[in-house]
Image 1 (tube, rainbow, N blue to C red):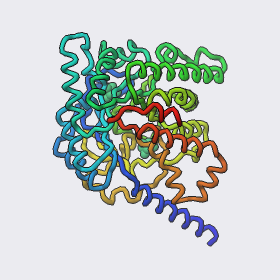
Image 2: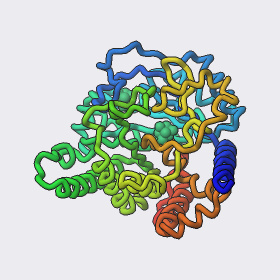
Image 3: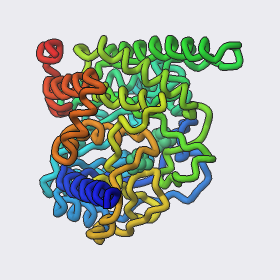
Image 4: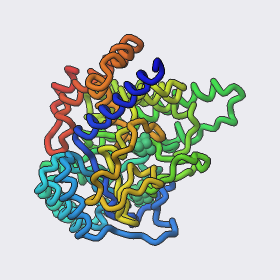
Length: 428
Ligand code: SF4
Ligand code: SF4
């Protein structure tokens, strides 16, 4: 009897938490196509990858969006491949999401259309693109940038001259009332020569390598933020490394953006130092550019990779966040749990009933960051005593979380349809 009661209480608590999570605003990431024209070495969808590419049928995407609207989903992302390869469809999808009352609509580009900026007609061409995208209810439009070194970024993408093109395109987008965000996928080239030449074999003591890594990535992130500010971006986000280790049996990626190449594959210790470098760099730039990456999330990842798993909040993937892949048009808990196929999104009801809110298998920021930010609120209603204990153990963690929220508010919750309020940002 003594053991039965706590077990029953734990079961009840988990059920209640599941219910709470489902009542929070949901999120859907729809991979509209896996076609891509870029050469990125860090991604399984690069142009040289040999597999049969597919785009979702237009009618199916509309059905998914309508079902998401009916489920009360508040955030929808249209990803690729390269979403602008299906530009007209993409704009129709974003309009449909707006008609369904979904306020947080995101999409982006690898920047291929920003090639050829010295040629005549560039301004008109990009003006037309900016007007078309800005006419939809899209809230955030990202442009990928892999390195603070333009040459390296262009080599990785396989697009010569796009950084110059991005710089010229940004004011054109701003004139149309759209403020694109710079999207950095963390990789070994992000800091240019600072980070890409680091080799653990050059260090006899692993601790020295970790320190060198921390220093190099701190400088690399710093150079990256300076670069994107110079280019004219007003929002920046960092995507955590999307590598899946071949020996990580519990993950079966369905999102082909994942890969196991060295350029995005880091050991746990390396990840810890990289997240620490990012966390320590961000505060110096928070008043100069709207940086989405929450410090609370980085804190949690640093602790996680330092061996303190239970202190991070579990991911909501599968419960109220979902991923739809372009190959099958089916729904998965996220881009990494390909073994759990829920079928068509519009038939989802009930299929995820038994999922438990306890996944921490990857660092996919699309799902981990909002889960971490919502964590304390969920704890407050599902496990107030646990929250009190956690706060007592780590009062600084709660302070970081609260400051993130204040900063988010000062940034207008990263509304990519309005200019930043630098005065407000500097006050946080
Ligand atoms: S990262 Fe994006 S742009 Fe690069 S190959 Fe993958 S899908 Fe294409
Ligand atoms: S942590 Fe989230 S995104 Fe990662 S595998 Fe688990 S459910 Fe998926």
